[in-house]
Length: 87
Image (cartoon, rainbow, N blue to C red; front, side, top):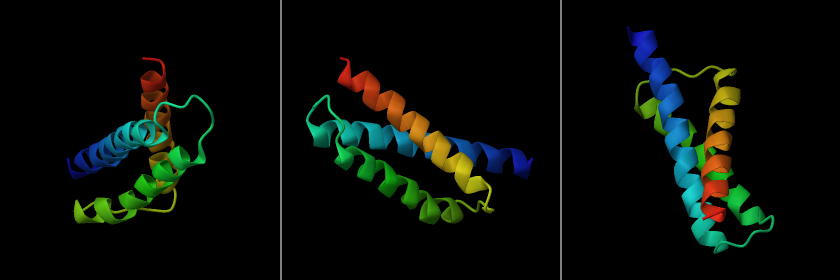
């Protein structure tokens, strides 16, 4: 049961932080439809926040977990930012 709960936390937290990064990126870039590196910097910062947030939630992290965490955060960020840009 603990592995199941830990897996949910490893999935849910990066997705939520990715969505938050997408909203912040949209607000900071003011809806400009060009590549803005500032939006990517926000994403990288919130992926880095996972390093400190997940251990506080009693989740053990291995080296291979970071690829999945970064991918989920990136996908969430990209989807949310793209949807907001197309509103």
